[in-house]
Image (cartoon, rainbow, N blue to C red; front, side, top):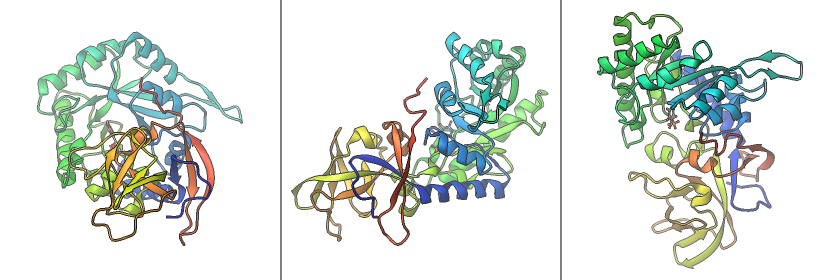
Amino acid sequence: MQLPAGLRTPTTIVLGDRLERNLGSMAAFASDSGIALRPHAKTHKCAEIARRQVALGAVGISVATVGEAEALCRSSSDPDDVFIAYPLWPAPDLVVRLRALAERRRRDEAGDRDAVKVIVGVDSVKSAELLSPLAGVVGVSIEIDCGLRRTGVRPDDSVGLLGVARAIEKARLDLVGAFTFPGQSYAPDGQTAAAADEAAALLQATEILGSEGFAVLDDRFVRSGGSTPSARYSSPSALTEMRPGVYVFNDAQQVELGVATMDDVALVVAATVVSRPAPGRVVLDSGSKVLGPDRPAWVSGHGRLMDWPDARIVGLWEHHAVVSFDGVEERPPDLGEIVAVVPNHVCTAVNLVPELTVVNCAADGEAGDIVETWAVAAGGKNR
Ligand SMILES: Cc1ncc(COP(=O)(O)O)c(C=O)c1O
């Protein structure tokens, strides 16, 4: 891959053509499956990408925090429908901010105004009670645990599930759906089983709610699931909505899982070879402060090199990535050479930088042009 000349490193680069292809491909898959797409914006944190997703048919965006929603639903060209897919703890300051977000009037150049539709995740009676001042202002979705054992009510815990649903009803909040995250898809060969868990959990929870008279047969009741590894196995009879996020860029984890190929990776960190201390060992100026520290046990390194798929980052310090070329046939890069590094987990890598440099890579291997820079508007918005 020929990166643009004259780059200062490390620089986090979006490969624009590949991004467009990934966006279009997931949008087409969702549309063909009859499942609404509500991409998780915690991956890219960029208004420019959120707008593209909506233009391609997304019903809105998902986020993890109120701060992300505030940053990405700012102007009238931004998404106006946001799901905070997280069991927020509705502390008083967050209740104030949620109201302001939902009542945010946004003016565009033509002077039009609109408000933001806000949905909040809930998985406890107490949080439903605390959200009651927002009755008529935000919608809520009950989180179901489909096997990740993170947050959410177990779908077979009918007492717990109905308790949360009744608390929502008592608080006069609008129950708009149920959601789950099949994060167990992040395991070798775990994708189809995770999608099956997700479908079963959403259907079971819906049945329990329906049996007690909750309006789950209403067309507007959303059964929301989705992770990037399991997205293509989503069940259209169980899900009405999916929330993959990583698919926009992909990363070394997705490549390792076989969910994406190197050709599908649309974000790299340009890094310079600063040392070649031993044969088969190369050190880059991109450490954990730009690549992110994530390395699940099943991943074979701390990241990959786009043009040396068999090389592995075997050591990661704050400002050093040590790459092993053991057993790699191709010649390692020279001192001073700039290489494209694929982070393990793109969401944490994006969150570490203030902006993304967008490049269009020429298909013939010619050096790409820098097209623009996009602010990581929701970067660091952890609350
Ligand atoms: C609640 C929730 N929904 C959707 C996603 C998006 O999944 P992925 O990161 O696999 O694209 C995540 C990711 O962490 C999540 O936590």
